[in-house]
Length: 175
Image (tube, rainbow, N blue to C red):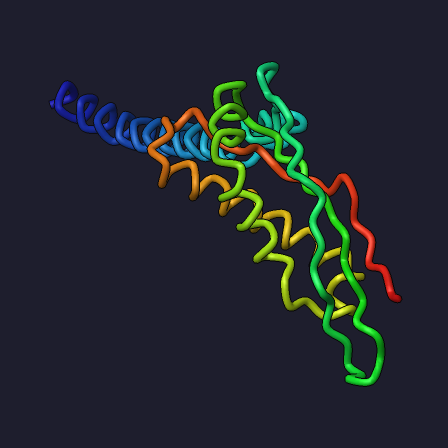
């Protein structure tokens, strides 16, 4: 009988010890999991330092083989608000920067197409538009886009394209 009482007391004494160990183990595990999650999603980003700069787009890099081609100087009449005022004339010359010398040769062989396209983009502009830098940049972007469209229409390979266009000469002259 004494043995039975001893076992009951040990069972009762072991039970609180066991439950305490389970609670402590649970608290330690939950704390460890929360610490890992906190580090993974919050602290690692803060401790990593500044993000590395992304490389620039390949469009911004001008290839070594890029060659300029100057279109001839052109003129366009400029519209004014006053119908009695003399008509200003815009004199301009555009330079196309091509991706390869072959592109330059193709444009040279069909230069009249490109000259006509550039002249059309400058026609019927007002004096205010002509003097606005943003409009000038928009026209140059259109020149580049349409030049690339013409190259596609001529069946040029994809590596033949116009990188950008710039004004070599741009001056509205009022008589």
